Image (cartoon, rainbow, N blue to C red):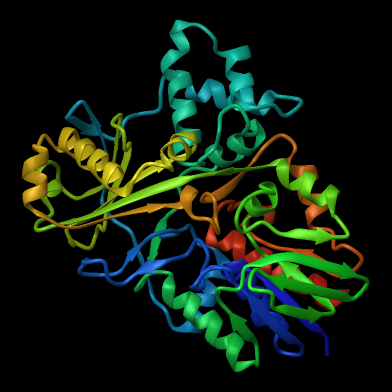
Length: 421
């Protein structure tokens, strides 16, 4: 029986702890006051039903996520509603892709060597006639992939964009019950879970690890899995950053070569679902307002609508006050639905901002690939002297990046590496 420390109680850390705790002594150290990481289901704040601050959808038939939900007895439901586009308050059915999109994807597949999206567009689609195509490509990379066009890998985008739109599902009661199930399974197996335990340093030697928290507590084990967001490894001066002794410079350098983007979500509940007066069965609305993406709870008719701002634009807004962001959200809705801001305020029941770039334990939302990420993953997926291991959605190498599935798979793989070490 080994002793193992897991740093981080998000989906990856809890999954690793659950698997390892069957025959090992496991301690989980979480810096935040809650479990779940970038999964956070809100059950109050004035809303009539649970709302998701972070991860919200299951993007396709994802095997490990669905298996875990079945184990927990948690139901899922397919999302509904149609997709629409609103341009300056004028609604149309979902836009077709910009002219040239298929040609752009073909050019992406013809590339012999990877490059960034911005470099690719400049070399292949410069000029006024491609302006809308380039705007669409940049916007989609920033909005959906939360990626910086000057950093994101073309190979990453072509594989994702070429895969099409999977069926989308929601988790009954939100993802929060899944986190609770994982934690309960860990505790049942004897895992000790500590919150408000910000790990500031990890001293290690072969089969010896000492994790020291901000309040001076020392935790010792034979091995450790570091399952914090890759952003924590990237930013040495961040409040939740970890110092390693001896240093692990090669691994920290590898982390720098993984893209990581921000998301700000704005959730409103109104007295009525007024959007269904605009068009039937509204699911998603895409627009060119400050908050460019909105979705409803369809097919549920709850009068709750969520706004999404991703990528560099979210990072740039991260320091703004919540009231300012809420105001920008209402202004965006005002234009999209042709209603005055005062009208919206008069029927507003609840409003909440979830600013992930400003969260000290996440510093953003999820990862994306740069042209150097493949090599980075090879480094970070290799244990250090059979003692230090890494996990998290950013370390996933598969068809569903940036998802809860990615985190769960990474946690499972890290646990398997520990068991083989």
